[in-house]
Image (tube, rainbow, N blue to C red; front, top):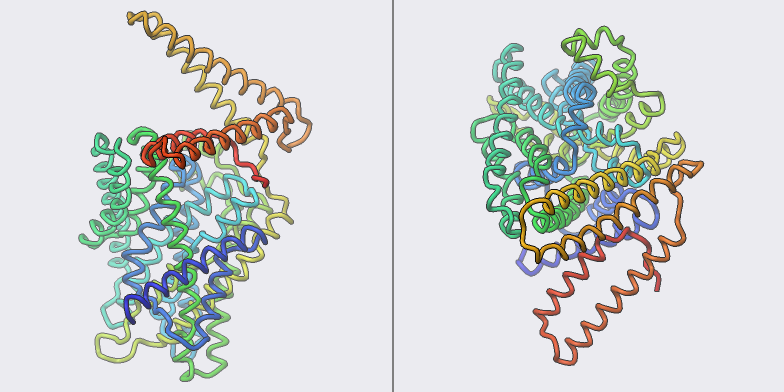
Length: 551
């Protein structure tokens, strides 16, 4: 394939991603499911397909996706819900893999326990991209968003480590349960240490990150450094990336300038958008490859294998959630540490109710990590024989991805709406305005301190100007809080005066921008100066709340 043809192929993919995003925004359908179906449609048409290179995905695609997800997560919220997150990302993954392994050993003709566990490890970890995109759009409560994010960040390390152990047993290496447990503990703990080392190195580079370009370079390199460092010492690179992302994201308000944060955030949003789109297109294109080797199996064998794989994935998750949420708190205390500390945790981490369990059960969509993992299974064993049932394992993994990504992805939003699970927008806005009020008051207090210190009298007018601006902001925030307190429902009250002021401010910014363009077109203003002035207006416009633009 020539360079020009490859470039056209990539540009066509970008065009499809943009078009699907536009359709998804207007129809409410999940972009991930639409892109996967388009990938399948393209795969059955004549023409070249792009094969999935698992090592390329695990090294170049997965680290930035996981790192972006970790940056967007809350380390504090994950700590607060750590018990549930760990149970989903470690215990549920292990149980899923073992059940599928046992099912294959006893019900699929010729299958081995090791091969079944390898498949189970690959299909066990959900890829929460589709569920999170839909959940955030429909206003899923923050607790459930945190659980889906936390599970998606940590379960990949569990699955990939278990897959490595299962494959080693299947290809002929001696299996030892104590050795497997030790390997898992070393891999996980080593990944945590590697991630912390990279995160602290980023923190130490704080003086360099006030320059937005340098901050971008450091941020883009961080997930790959964490992954390669961990993999070089044979521990979990996935967990290293996640840990580094969580710590760096938690420290970002302290270690980066405002300009750096704005630019880094924009760059990562673009990378995330493009990589996710290409990944889901790539998933669909693997269909011809995974069905190519099925002719060697009887239909009954394929049906049984599919039933075990899909049935375990769909049914075990809700059952596990119901059972774990039904455990008595005394057992949680015995498992979780000191009773006093556990009592404080219980106040923060309440049980999930039936509606929340239902939504969380249906948020287990699988994605690229499942296919990348299953494609790492070698073609042959140490003795040179074909890896047992490799083609069947590939097909079962693809079927699980397709059923969950399309089936659960398309129905997740209607299910959440039917359950009535929605974060209270009034509470969220109230919290933000309370925080704004507190920050404005802290700024006024700091101005009082500065005014009482020795300073040049020339600063007095500037201080008074800032004081008036802050007092105006504080008054505006308090008026919003009063309006929220007076509202009778959970809906956000709309102030006609505020909306009118927003329209006027946008119109004024548009007028300023048009005048600057006239100056540029008349030769009175250079393009370089225009960009500087436009950037000022862009930042001012970015502070305004998002509203539909008409005309």
